[in-house]
Length: 193
Image (cartoon, rainbow, N blue to C red; front, side, top):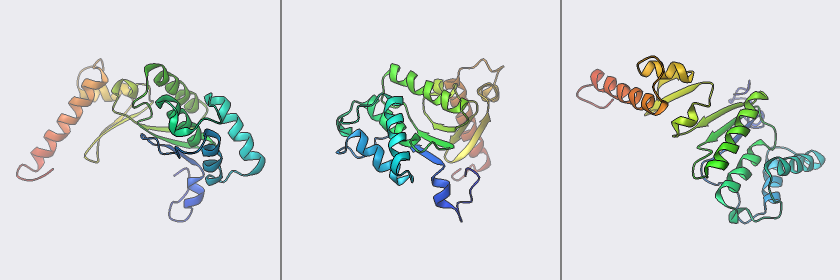
């Protein structure tokens, strides 16, 4: 991961990875600044480097440093979670359902941030059930029951689903998963796939 062997360099790999969970997983009783400082320290930032990154991140995400994290509206909680995941400027960012439960304006702002990160060279891996959002990605993997059923550009995935790629991504997803399940039944007609 990020050029590191997880068997021998776990801490170094962690320092190059950011993560934002679907559910708010920060400390709700801490202020925004306290959460950023705590997690920045966990990522190895100290002293002036930590203060500089916290200030930059507060400004980038438009966060109020003294606000109590647990009392923030959903969109601001997601902004704080994203800010925390990016505080140490990781090479790879994992986003688990980053726009789940937030309004359309906040969703659009998140995708602008995600696109800017990718353009700056950060590898961004997004899990989503919103297939229209998957269209924003360079590559898509469709998985079912732990098995990768499709992997490629949005156009290639739509083509795999059938047709000329004009299929919308929701229809492509359904088609690929149904076909994958049918293939599993065909190979193992009397048992579990």
